[in-house]
Each structure stands twice: as C-alpha cells, then as structure tokens.
Image (cartoon, rainbow, N blue to C red; front, side, top):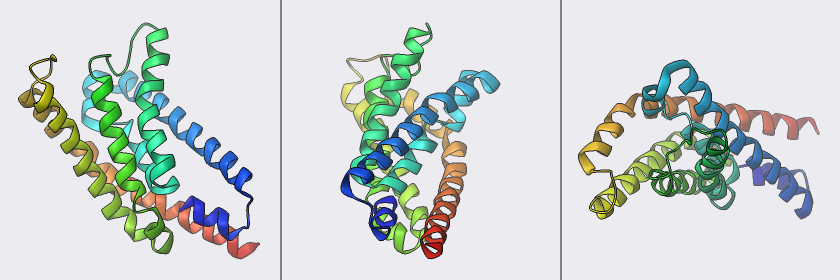
Length: 194
C-alpha cells in the first residue's frame, strides 16, 4: 500500500527506500515499546492476553508489503530481546525468541501479501490480518509440536497461551484494519491534494 502511494507521487527509488526504512524502524521501535508499556500496566499476563508486539507487525505487513513487512516481523522480537536483555529483563525470553521470530515473520509476510489489494480497497485489511493471525499462530504451534522434545514448551502449554491471546487477536483483527483504512485514506487524500 505504501509502495503504491509513493509510486503515485513519482518518488525516486532511493527516496522510497529511505521512507520505507524510516517507517520500518518506527514500527520496530513501537514493537519494542508497546509490550513494555503493557507489561508495566498489566504485568506479564497482560502481554500474553493482549499480544502488543503483534499490532505494529501486522500494520507493517499491511502497509509495507511482504518484503519490508517480513523484516519488521523478524526484527521486532530480536531488537526487543537485545534491548531488554541489556536492561536485565529479556522480552521475549531467549527460549521463546526463535519461535516468536518465525511467528511474527509469518504474520508480516501473510498480511503483506494483501498490500496491493489493500491499496485498491482498505477493506482487504480485514482478511489480511485474520489470515496472518491464523497462519502465524499455526506456525508457532507447529514449531512447538516439532521441537517440544528439545524445548521447555509443550503443545498444551502453547495452546493455552494461544487461547488466552484470543481476545488480543480479536481486538487487533478490528483495530489494525481500522488503522490501515485510516492511513490509506490519508495517503489518498494527500495525493489528491498534490
């Protein structure tokens, strides 16, 4: 969607990369800060329930497309882990990090595949987000099933966390598309004013 908006404005390739890098960095920063705020306000259970890191990643996929969104998805948990480890309280935990990186990469990749459709109609953000959530959670659960003999995680444990996070997923299935529809309207409005 963002790519199309930049193309309509005849933005050069180098400037597009700059803009997309800045938006990606902002979304990754939000993916680090938002979980800290939720954990501060609601504790660790709040993070499992509301899934705050997922919100900027889903926005990144819908807005930036599959390639750039993929980078946001993969880097968000990694950057969060590195920053919070330096502060003495790693989030996510190191044992969960590879699983979250895979899950959020799928979230961003799948939602990013809808980006061109979203630029045609913002309503495509709804199936984009829901498809991404289903695929990402399935990948997480599948990876746990494949590796549970080697990790501290089990399928029932992760399934319990997935069920706890249904409320966060449901809220994001509405909030993210509304944000994307608003951003799309803003980008189109700005173009019509040019």
